[in-house]
Amino acid sequence: MCLSPVKKKNFSNKKNWLVKPVNSIKNLISNSYILDRRRIKKKLKSVKYKNFEVRLAKNFKDIDVAQNLRYRVFYEELKAKPTIKNILYEKDFDELDPFCDHLLVIDHNKNSKRESIVGTYRLIRRPMTQIHGKFYTEGEFDIKKILKQKGEILELGRSCVDKDYRDKPIIKLLWKAISAYMEHYKIKILFGCASFPGVNYKKYKEQLSLLHYYYLAPESIRPKALPPNNIQLNYCQKKDLNAYKIFKSLPPLLKGYLRLGAYVSDGAFIDKQFNTIDICIVLKSNSLKKRYINLHKKGKKSSKIIFIKNFLKNKIEEDLKIKCEIPKRGEIFEI
Image (cartoon, rainbow, N blue to C red):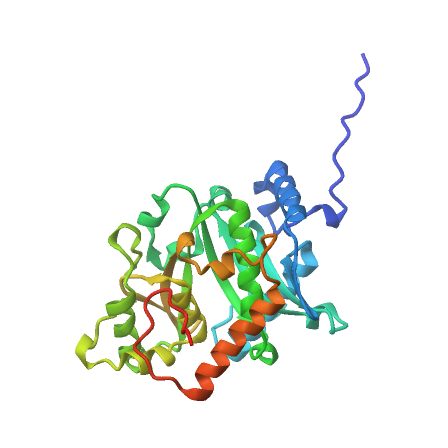
């Protein structure tokens, strides 16, 4: 009896793949998982504003360029400590990258692929960790209380924007896209790390104390920094804090999270490789401002109008230097 040879599936077409196989990782990822992610990506529309577009990475090259941008920001600019592989490839990457969704900001006025990707965010959902085994945050914080929560959860990480684009509405564009992503997957809780530059925590005693007294997460979802690199937050007495002045001195990303309604962890983690002091932030989706959640829904104001409105509010606040009490958790400065 003659047996006909079994036809092997051809995966040589890179367009059909959303993650880059690295060493043995290819064997760990099921074809059904990859195909499912491909279908989802087609459903999620990109966010466009003038010459900018925000979308999920479609192929190897997209992820490679995002990793190169991360390398330039984290290692060359912020002086993180690279491994030999980081230096060799000029990329920031880890074992989680193949299992994540990578959100990209693209400037269509740039000609080359390398220059066109000017911002990125890494998104990890619970199903993705069933393949890899854990979230990135679990290496620094005890997040068991978050993992016990019902519904879908999302970890945000590796956020960075090219230094020439930080005065443009890149972060707002990213959050509009994240809002659409959250609604698509019915995300209940977001979490991740926001950082202070450097590892000298004594410089940030007032800022850390402010986070402890005003933004500490409820016990039911509170992450806790893991030893031995953990530090406390309550270095100062609450009555000694000039809350509004200190709030303005917080890092922009952390300040943005707090304005959206985020809580912070019990303690901080000193990340010696990335030369940062990390705070774990936790954000319930129902705490997000409606203007971020509903931007992509039909019948709402155009994103262009909303961006202009928000920009003017922030600009007026800065120009007039309005003095007010520290904003409550989730409060945008209202004029």
